[in-house]
Length: 79
Image 1: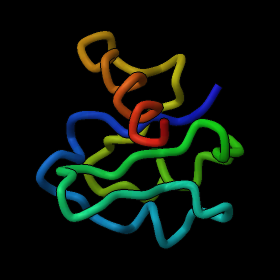
Image 2: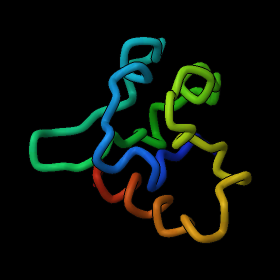
Image 3: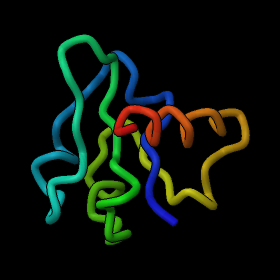
Image 4: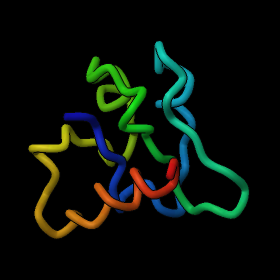
């Protein structure tokens, strides 16, 4: 299991999560509208979710159903 960044990040792209991640697993680029969590590197600490100002980060099992596609979007970013 890992954390997933979902729809509320789109267009906001606040870097608070990046700054607190102890394993540097949250990334993005200029062409992306949001940040992504690398599922292979995430240690499930939850610090990113605590600081997200738009509450866009969810533990994978707690991801709201309407944002289920963000599991794949996060994983595909690192494929």
